Image (cartoon, rainbow, N blue to C red; front, side, top):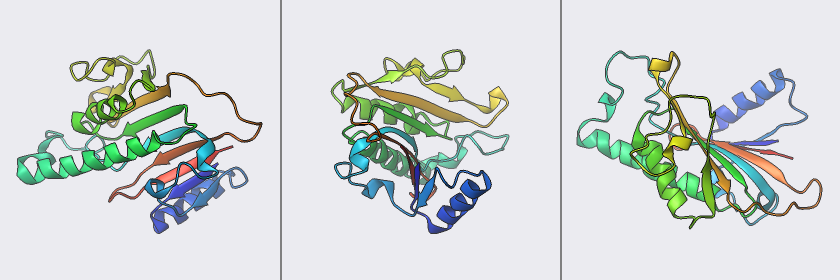
Amino acid sequence: VIALDVDKRRCELLKKTVSIMGASEKVTVMNKDFLKLDPTQAPYCNVQGIMLDPSCSGSGIRGRSGSEQQDFEGDDGRQRLQNLCAFQTKALSHALRFPRVERIVYSTCSVHREENEDVVQACLGATDGLFSLERCLPNWLRRGQVDTFYGAESCVRVTQEDRCMGFFVACLVRTEPLALAAPGALRRMSAPSQRRAAHNASLEE
């Protein structure tokens, strides 16, 4: 596994966490920017799976009793949300550019439709059917907002009503899986990102 984090401080923290978990021999942490990776270059051209957790509003993890939307009210709030959505769409679109990727998991700790279903819908639409949604956690009752686009029910939503922090998950899979490469050639990558457009990635051999 190769884990990437653009933020140096968080990268060092990730290294310590990996060491504490006894996974140092399996996980290599690197201070890199996921958006600057060239999907056509090795080892990234052989990435088979990506887990993307982009910078988001964090509206699902705030333990407040008021509306989870209140921080994004007014012109300034809407602009902030729009900027986040633009970044998230860019990140997911970049993940879809990896030539051998077969599965991408997109997640946020946001409850806003704009950061969740809207991003997934926009990016899926741009693949011309090359990717589709796979139903996540099929027994989970709270699903994606079905009034946004066909197939949104394949996504998972969690709110504080479920007695935990709010988050969203979507799993995008290639509709026609690629043929396997030589043994050891394929890798799996996950790319969560941090606040202020900082982000991580990790690769699994």
